[in-house]
Length: 304
Length: 244
Image (cartoon, rainbow over all chains, first blue to last red; front, side):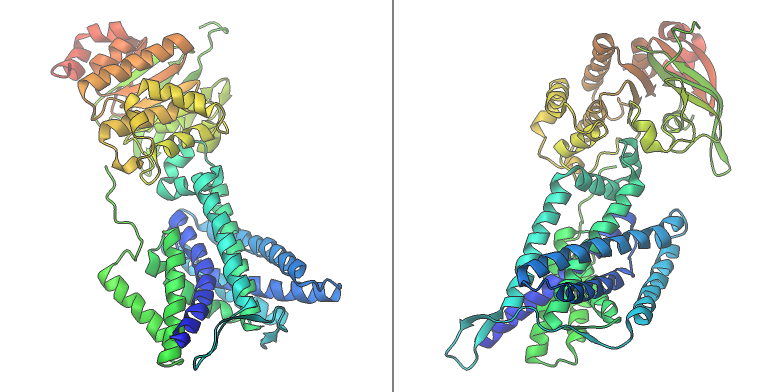
């Protein structure tokens, strides 16, 4: 029981990170109907920008942990958002209106480019970061196993919840959020209502990248090491999460992320670490077999 | 035409094509300020294409679209729509996964959501049915309710030129009458200029000051509403059996 509880805490933490990345996949899919394969690498860039920011802040003498965390988060979100913006401008916008496969191929190219760019610029070796936050809370003691939630996990979970709340409010309540949903549902009509669709798509990439930056920073803090290749693995997982939740569905992406995180963690804890990816992807295959639109994907019929 | 009465909208020599298929050929129409102008024609004559061409989606291949003294042909659609034009398009195009209220907000977005509460009140008075459905998702409305919503959404931007594409489609005759009288009232009280596309030629010509007949992408006739109603060829082609 206590062991399972510990896995639950770990799984939720990991799931939050996947959920944040999955949102970027699902948003872009919703609005332009393509899978942005470079999104995982944008997440990786976010992790690297966080790492660089931590080091620079440390050199600048800003060592108060809360201030450093907030600053790094802000810097990482801004710079990663710029990457997201540039990726769309350079790799996808020129291909809008061309055949469906073209932006997909371009996305894969962009992914390879970003990986190699970071590999060349930062080196291929694993980059460590000394633990920024230490300590934790003991949730349960006395049994065979002591259940703890580390301060880091608390920060990850709380930050993710705050970011998700802000994000949800943006999508649900603001003109930008409505414009995004309008473009997702009927681009031509959105134009007829004066919506600048190109701008809305750009902002979708910007927001998706900013969320990925949050995930990148969390990943860095949680694991303490990153390299240029983390975007691929995390990206595939998050993509799986988005599909599992129902691609195009925002709550689905978060739910899918949490599920993948939990499945992976529990499988590693009880069966085998080597096969954790197999578990995650098998669940995906089963879901798609029986619920092709994912857990929260839409199946409502639209009136003609 | 004197300078003071320069038309609000004038199309000249407009040709629109989808790929190699020409949908409109050398079309010229004018809509004056404060006028209701109708465009009648059979299915596939190019009526909706003409409406969409005015909005730049698709842009005309040739010709000029002068609105408020400026040529808007070739401008991006969203910029055209920011100049005070609103369209209730063919097929209604309600956002299915937005509530009725959100759909109406989308209409008001182009003017930055100004006067939203006030205009909401107005369109709800116009279509009381919508008021009951504000929290419902657009996709769950009946066809008639969607049509009302499409018109209401267009009105939310306080347009100076309103383009209505087949507002009577799929509506019960009573609702059609209600919508047409609403259009007439708006035109009389606010001076709203309306370009109306209709298959229901009888109602449209009775409502409109002037009308054009579109056949296979060309304008073949024009005149006042009463004038066109009286013409035997119009009667034969568009009115017989169509009066309801």
